Amino acid sequence: MWQKMMFPVFLGEQVPPETLASTLAELDRCLQLLEDKFLKDQDFVAGPHISVADLVAITELMHPVSAGCQVFKSRPKLAAWRQRVEVEVGKDLFQEAHATVMKVKDLPPADPATKEKLKPSVQVLLQ
Image (tube, rainbow, N blue to C red; front, side, top):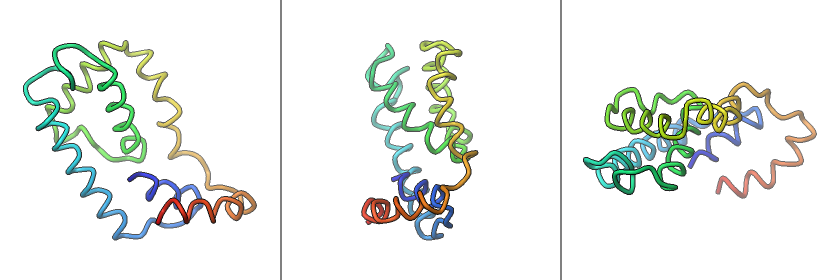
């Protein structure tokens, strides 16, 4: 899902408005599913204790956060879960684990030679 957003940005191109809208709609649907089907009334995805499922899910959600999406802002259940995951992992380790992805939006676009070299592969991924 996020490849359709991040690759054009990396290549220094605009994300088409329809791609942005459909990606954000899909993100919203996935967040609702996470809340309704997995978190329900429990502290973590798979039950009362943190598991690999929580670590995978939080890692996936940090990608749209790194792109500027306020994933947790209007979702108190999700925000509370994120906070519990951070507490369980430890704040320093949580920040360290996501440091690289949080810097992606600050990277400059690819240089022209890299852009041309990657363009065919990226176009295949975006189809």
